[in-house]
Length: 231
View 1 (cartoon, rainbow, N blue to C red):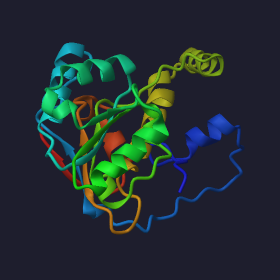
View 2: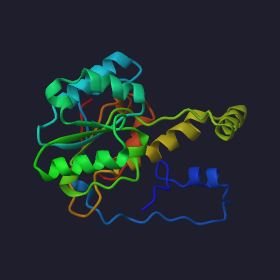
View 3: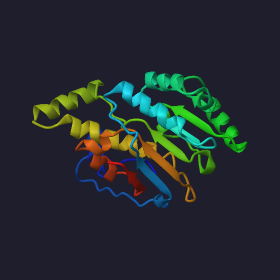
View 4: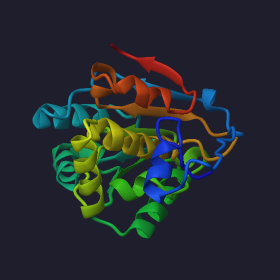
């Protein structure tokens, strides 16, 4: 079940692992019915380059979540997580469990306990919550991804590869950043459907997925969720 393809292909895995072209690769179909989930890009989605407008959009959207909802809101910035948490109305903030304030194990235990009691619970998490956590069934019915998970290749190996690609006339952003973001986006969306009977909603609050030329490639690499995209 590992996410090994990027944009539906294995080239990025080959490049990162140093695998020769003689090897064969195969992506196997999932047993999950992804039609049970809806991928939404709502009218509230904004371009994160306008930080204040983006934070206001996140606050507005989270404030509208249903009282009984079990949600995971994924942030790529600790500063933005704190800013949104601080700006929420008190009635909503009472349902928020922020990674910034609690250990991961305790946070998940509190979330499960709240759902078991029939109460709503909203987890605010960073990158570590976009993979490796398992909240099946009613424990998670809504994943909110605040922005596309791009990372700057600033480690020595990534920076050297990016420099080499550019020196060869290539585009390091399209060759490295977009495929890596695709893997992370698939992993984040994967928090919702953990077993065959799971269902729910994935909301993406980053408008770049419909305004930038790489956006369609990122959408096409996702599982076949039903889509509700506001242009």
